[in-house]
Amino acid sequence: MADFLAGGAAGGGLASFPYFYESPVDLVFSEDPDLGPDAFDEIIALQGAFRALGLSLALTDEPGSNHDTLTLGLYNRADDVADLLDAAGIELVITPAIPATAGAPPANAVRVIKSDLGDVAMAGTALILLSDEGEQRHVAVLAASNDGLESAVGRLLGAAESVGVDLSGCLLQDNLALCPTGVDDEPIEYELVTTGPPDLLPDASEDERPDEGQTTAGETAEQGIIELGETKSGELAADEAHAWTFSDGPATIDITVDANTNLDAVVELYSPDDTLLANTDSAFAGGVEEMRGIAIPDDGDYRIVIRDFFNDGGNYELTVAAGEPGQDEAATPGNRIFIFIDDDGEPLAGGFTSAALMAAELSGEYEVTSWSAADDGPLPADALQGVDVFIWESGDYRTAEAPPAEELGAILAYVDAGGDLLVSGLSPAILGEIDTAPLGAARIVANDPVLSEGFSDGQPLDFDQTYPVAVPADDDTGSDDYLFLTRGPTAAEAGAAVGGGEVAANDQRTIFLLAPLAGLAEEDGAQLFNNIMAWLRL
Image (cartoon, rainbow, N blue to C red; front, side):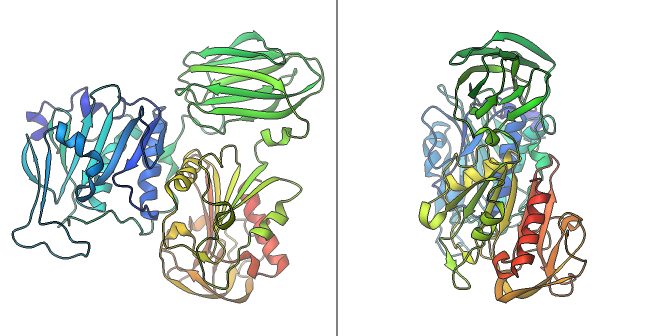
């Protein structure tokens, strides 16, 4: 009835979310709460919905002054959007103040949203407000509780199917929507708490790019010759690729494509006989793609092909410069590995990680970067660009606080783009403050031939001591199809899985290993790790 009286979902305003945005869009949580694992799913799903429409969405502490924004938060922590609410004639009334400790509000408590739509109780209601004054677009989404906020975010995700925001059942007026959350007896929470365990392995169907793997465009347009030391500008039309010819070999070259904010460039290099020599798609819309140290052995006609992953087109600049020999392997997919050693928490068993074992097994064949949280600080925002496999290794270190926003943003962006991931450690940060149980031995499950290579089904693996290892929910270590390590002699008990993986719809792969590789016999640890790397397609 409310939809009918309001004229349905109009073509503009909130109903056109997120099409009114321009990249890049900043995702902000009001008053900068400590985000825990429970926030991962919503952030990844939102980023996936935006990417499906050719928009970039990045988590940040502070929005850029000229960026469009999406702000999420609770009514009790809404100071960051106070100006937007005031401009829209909205008043949030909370009297008396909500105490930090949970408890029932007094009988005379008032918790209402005052607007031109009337006075509406905060409990059970989410607010979605669009401010489109000036050059930027700002959307604020507020709710009474974390569960209510998740419900409101779910309404935004209709954009993933290109149908716009779901405003069914909402009270609508201009750029304001008051929507039911469907949360029974919803509390008015003091602050946003997201430390609970997430679903962990996000369904990448919410983050599909138009095609699996390499994108294809309808037409490749020849652009002419580019010489060593030159920069050329180009503008891709929709469903078009550009091909530039380089004939200044023999040489070692660096190829750089600097795209505008609407172009997610894919760069490919072909030999004179049309064999693909190298390609890259490591950055996001508006990013810089680089292939460095490419050896061109002769003066044949080599083709540099540029396309947009989403086939929407856009502007770019292509530069071919002299490069240094010996770097060309970094441009070939499957070579670069980043080990993030999350070692700045509380040690559960004396303080150790398995990073040295991993690096030793990978050395010589792969380009490996190791980054210690304790020694090097938080993970930089651009650390994972161009990385083929990201290893998040925490050893026996356990952190009570969520990762910093910049670090979390880098990891989410990497997974959002389809990057393969190994999460290993006794109690990884992604699981939050979860219960642990002693683990002194495990057994192999031969569900997958790659993950169980060199082992027999049911083979026991003994650790050098008993370790306190996280006991996850049944669905927190991947699919049963890729379960490869369990506690003790049986997998029947809850939380028995300590090693498992999942393949998402876009072929993104994730492994969870809740056991210390360094605590196994050297041969067993090396075999198990190499199996995991092989399964991650290295």
